[in-house]
Image (cartoon, rainbow, N blue to C red; front, side):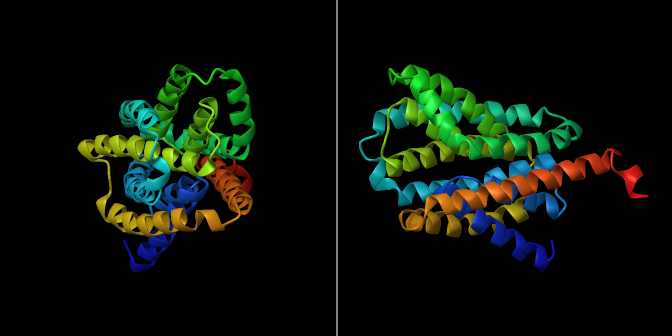
Length: 261
């Protein structure tokens, strides 16, 4: 890895960590950055998730006051997040690289749309779960956690939707619980990837450092920023990355190459 690539990854990780702690969307930055420096897609996904875990954990520390009084919900949903993260990671490890490469543009599109319309999804799920049942939220969280362990971009919006079902209203407490669940989810997924030996450690350590700086700083300044502006920025980045990977995929598979000769 060159010095330029190292600087590029550090800046991408710092920005990704800040976005995740404020409004989600860090994977739109970190995952493509790892692919841009030449990592295979599955290794890039595993490395990015492993690096992001530390940033999530640091953000949880910054939100520690908001987590007080949420022990029961944290225990139930946190346990589910651990199991789901491991299952999702195992599913990724058993996915052939060629298939995952083809899935990348669609995963990015899905997660970008999820992030864009997350508010409406949350409202819909809140009405469906009007009884505010922990059982319904737990069922939802399991599938969310599996997706989080497999890929994870946009997973924060789904977790916020789960909290809407539980009737939570305080956005700071919701963000605190979101970061706790994401740290547990990505933590168990990362352990699975580490045991499987698919994590590229040099980029991972570099991105961990950048994610910690961005994650803690993002959580600290979250209350001072306008969430709508941050969300718009993430949406633009998400759609830009989606377009790039669709073009990249169709170029590599020969759909566009005949027209470029």
